[in-house]
Length: 298
Length: 339
Image (cartoon, rainbow over all chains, first blue to last red):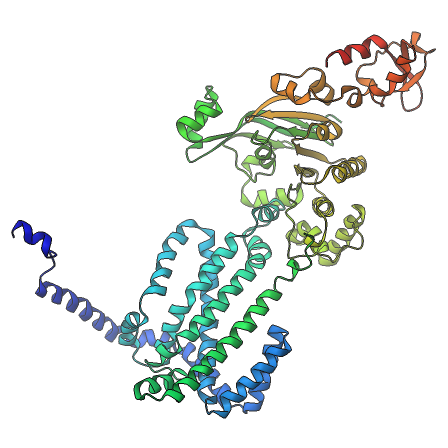
């Protein structure tokens, strides 16, 4: 190789070498998924069972009852009569334009994803807050989860589990879980050192410190994380529909493919409306958790 | 009354990754500045030895960075010592294992913090019963105890308020009640009144002295304020740069400061106001009986008018008005001359 060529073209790997490299990895992964795909799928069976049960419950119950339950939850979450009335009209809009069933599917998958994200995210966040080493190793993984294009990690998931609800659920959870982990970690780290020291001085052990001081004081921040998680889960609905998740994403996808503008707009608006309701309810609920900050002396 | 409750022996604290390795260098005379410059370690405490008497108020005083907050945290081991011994009732706190240490903190010590350290998400009753609930005391019993101490520190009517609805002085009363509700025999007060404004601070000092009359706790009180130290302390220990420079009764500190640092500390204090007559009186009773009487527990300032009126000797009386000694114009003058 002569000297100038070294600078003008990158000294890259040979074409055949690269091909073998890709083939070997893909082959090994295909082998792995053929052997273990079924047993890994079995692990997710309880989640799938719950997801289907929840979806059927929402879809098969009389719509009036579902709306009443939703409005009650919205009112008790937000204590705002305006939001409740607004939500009522939003549900009427959704139902009247024929999007009730898809909306129920979306609500059920968002609900299950949020539940899973909280269930895994908060313990991981607690772990991270307790050790700088854990934080240093988990943080880059979270960065990857948030920036890697979702289609890329969907490939191995689909190879392993096929097309369906579970791969979609995984895609949504992977995308939506980082904020709750990060904000749990942040919330706990921000707890006033003197308050924590006081608990320690009175002989609190680790779990007493966690449950009496750290988590209660971090709760408003954690709730901001839950809010973010829900929003990000909703943002993934359309992408998840590409691998077979039912819900408002599928009509949107169909509308893109066939250039049905109105259909796309209506379903898009339904997603927006859901997002607004989820956001306002979880925000005002989070705010009410900080009631001790009201009526401050300063 | 002179039982030693807390005995701190040869205590060293160095902050940094290689604290243990550098202890011997510090013992050989490496000073704070060199330790920081050459090894990037901070010398927190340098060979501290203090005996703290049972039921007394031991003040630990020093400017910020002198190591006083570090020292008090060694008594309940919120900070691990690099080397040394902290004996409480002949038990070495530094040797306790994890669960013994929790038990020790739960039952033996109470702590009051400069910035209060109250739980902002809990109301006053729950804050006060913190120690009891950590111990697992029955809810109704701990509630009752909390109410008793809330009443004792004068916060009735505020039981169900949150800390940030209270003024600083009231918050620190909660802090005090919280520490006392646990009924510890040792009370650790880390600049407990420093964040309060002067009038409230003086109020709190009076209240602490009043409570101490009945409670008879062993109190370790950290402050940077000499007036506070002189008012509260049975003994005062002065720290400078992690070293103990003097430990003695308030009058010892005032009348014979150990070094320039202490001298600077005490030079602006009005001695006649702080010193009690009993500290400089003579025990000669026979000749003293005809002179005007002053009480032994009042300060020297109270005899100045009599001396200015022309008296040259006064008789000193105890609480029962018995004459126990005398004080002369010359003795008082010699105190004043030191200014």
